[in-house]
Length: 105
Image 1 (tube, one colour):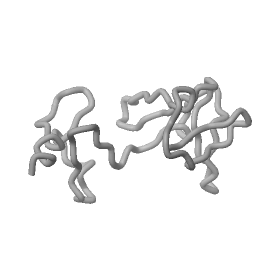
Image 2: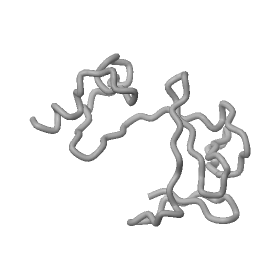
Image 3: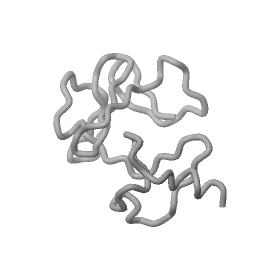
Image 4: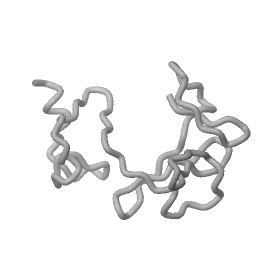
């Protein structure tokens, strides 16, 4: 699990996430997501790939593309173009429930 400490450093070194270590995820209109930490700061990445949670406002540096996300009872295809296939999985509910069907097979 990925967590943020009080100095805004981001670590991916947990086997279990405590409640204070979670992020609020917002789906943006352009299909990206932003991650708000328990500190009230946004996760960001700079050109050098440094990831911190030190931004008070969400701009383009705080927007991430969700590549793979499967909920409990779902399975994602290994198709590298899955994100371009409209209607397979929508977080707004307008889809054909493909991850749920792939889990069955």
